[in-house]
Length: 273
Image (spheres, one colour):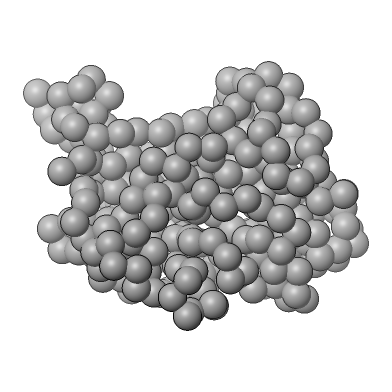
């Protein structure tokens, strides 16, 4: 039995709804699912779940395994589309909304197993809002967390994150990481402006940690962003190798015009060692 799902290519951009070969070519997804390889997969295309109740603050969403946060002008909904997606809509300047995993089961450390992550997301505007997508620890979202209420916002001092961020109104996505409690407040940029988003157009943003090399690589539509990060062990350095992660997706509005960000699917897998 093969230990990896087989794909073709991997060097050209892949904007399809499926997993990008550049990220996933060596991931033994089916063997993990079948129990032949020791690991874990979380895969969600947002087509299962009940009606999403309106929430304020950080509260459990009905029918799906996520916490949701809304400011006063925000909503989290299932759009009526083929395949499924979740939409975050916000109508108030300097406020936002987020979803985050209830269970945080992944960890990126040089002493732990290979990890793969990819999410397919889009923003309705590249001028009205900022967007964040990636892996976040079990810290509740507020109007100041994970993105501060400053104008423009920065990453809050509280919380650990690895992934992608489009600062408010820029359209350009950076690859970043941030660890709290180690005297480093600001997020650390690994690749600046790795992609400029197109309004209302899906993009796939992924990561791959390889234990053999100890490197974390970021991808846009399955193509490497270039710069990598050498991941330490669980020593609490400026990289958050000592915490467990789940999904974080959200937005912060820069203008009074309503902003919307959508996520179509996300998948994360990790091998146990």
